[in-house]
Length: 189
Image 1 (spheres, rainbow, N blue to C red):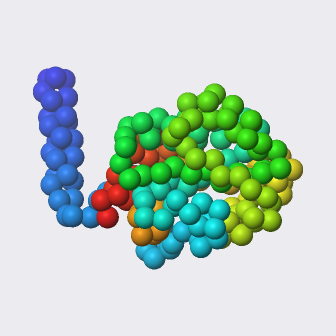
Image 2: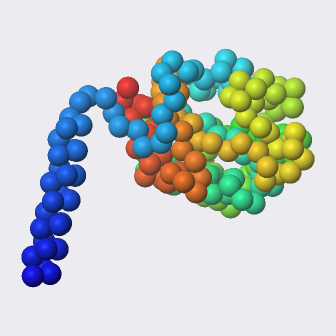
């Protein structure tokens, strides 16, 4: 009797999942991260320090090489996701949120330690050059908090037209598979 009930429950669950898959059948790609309202674009200030963002599906995040909490997770997840995506027209970019301390040597060490070297472009510059980027993305940089672990660290996905498509968060929905999925969906739009 218990086996029959278990089989019936499993078949019912399978029918629901199959129904959802078949109902989805539209042409709009499915994003796994949270989706912003349509029409929000990469802030223009970002192109002044990272012109390579143009024309590619891109994952954008904000890192501090001295951060010991979210940043190592984000860098490792992005590195793994970029290896899943492969050589497609996608890019992952991290803007420094503490450019005074994110030296080239620290950046190289950080990216190597968290398996993101060659997968994640780390953009640094002066505070004056990055401030419009942080403001445009509405990011709280660690240089303003005085604490390397206290800053904004979303991973936002944009399509080749620069439209914001989804956001993933470390410890919530940021996984290599989810990021690779959302980058592929942004590439396909």
